Length: 300
Image 1 (cartoon, one colour):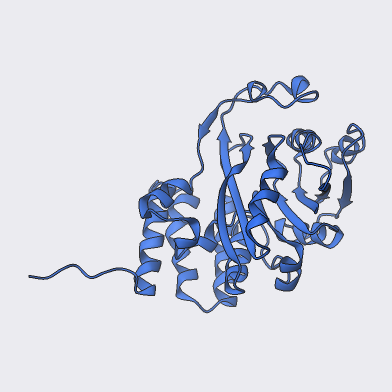
Image 2: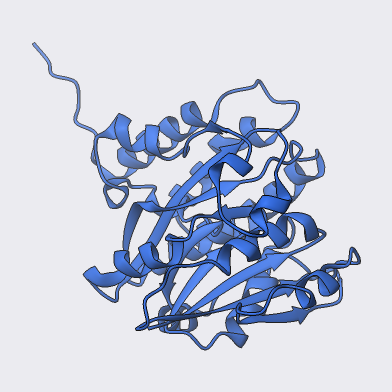
């Protein structure tokens, strides 16, 4: 199997370098090979020079797209998909670091069948120093800041005692920072919707379409990513998220799509400060009520 790793990047040179160095150390067996497609979404921070100076051994293709009003993760990932030649596409963000077994674990997760969308774990790293020199020569957890938060999907799965596919809202948790699917399925679905511009929901909408096409979702704990710390989302992201949610609802006439409004307190920097977990529980309960999965309270 050939694997295509698609990584969009915008002003992310330093984090992207660590991501690519980690991808260069993947422990794939001889039956598998990997290519990495970096889509530079109009950066002017030397990303091109950094990629050109990477050590030999990583099959990386650098695609530059000038910045425009249409720029965004959806368009960048579609450009990467257009250049991909692999059977399996792994979606990854530029600010993620991965262990040497990362790609092998994605491949193993797909051994169950060719109709899977696999989403892997994401750990949040703290705001600490990174031993960049050590990471140039070896992958080591000791070179990274400590993990300060686990995957935010797991408490939801625990609360409802189910696998990801058992959630009515499972499609919402297809996060493109760590996901994989056969390239043929992505092409057949039309890739990402490029009307999603700015921050938020372009990956959830793709997950919605893929599940409606009959693909099965699997949450795999083995292929994990380690998210390098970044500043809290700026206030502008709230407006982008709201516009993207409005577009999501305009192309899918489904009440459950609108239920994602429950996450606005998390996105809105002036909101009441509800936690993502509380919002996720409300989202799933409301979706189950719509689907008739909530049992009425006993009487008498």
